[in-house]
Image (tube, rainbow, N blue to C red; front, side, top):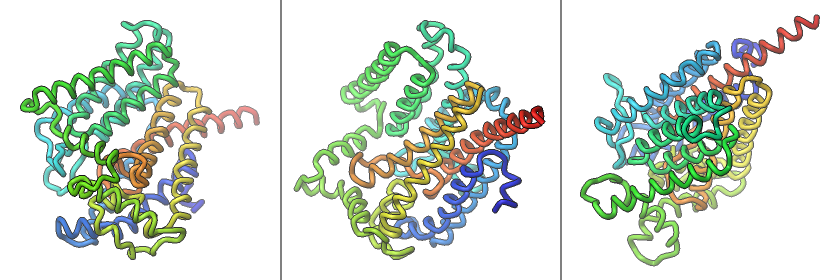
Length: 391
């Protein structure tokens, strides 16, 4: 392992965790896709091969980006932001619809899809981080400091919310956390949060008043998920059927117990529509048990810890903000998947980074880690230079 790691610069612990998870994802995807085979046809090997393609692309992206000079990341932040807007607009008008949501762009000539919101999340994190650095002395001014931050957040979240409320809400809260880290005054933070809530409320009221406009086409889905969660013990047949996914997820966790049913031996995964993605954690516990699930949670915490260490060590403020934004995003995404599966949160579409059957989510998680490792590589270089000077 040490021989191969010499080609991978940056933090070795982060490399080990991400490579371990991505390798393990090949086992779990092959095991967790029976429901997909039942619904869409094909074979488990077919989906495994498709996932393997994404894993290879993800690792290649991570490796390539971590070798790039980190100064280019800041320089590309603005371009990435405008590219994200272009992709979201393209998806809005020409996106491929899956499960009632038009979130995907189909890549020509190959049977692969890309979710534009996954790129938009990453682009917004680095763009907001760049603005925070540029405007750090003007954050007390609405016009010169706050509006340049608020407008990009509003634009991206507005374009995402139509088909993916949970992602838009999570991204908005993540940006608020970044602004807090960037020392935006409390009063302005509360005002920005209030503006966001007010705009969301107005959009909901407009949709309820004029449903024929179709401003929020998935509003009924969001509403049902929330009400079904609140009425989880209802005897109503429709409500009980709608809660079946969440109940099966919780039952899978119960059945898994300490040591699990064994790889491939889980039964409830055949009744969970997104066992390989949105309900990944429940299926994981069913087959591998609570002890392995606790170890998985520990790996995510170690990953966050290592990223925070990089953020605190670097002297570049932009690198600190980006690192913290990426670390919080990855842990939040994993936490939401766990909380949905355990019944704490209503059903929503957030999967497990590096593990769930992926496409764009896996690739962009790898890109994010590539950026972190580029920053860590800078720290290694600075340390080596300091050691050489002392010698």
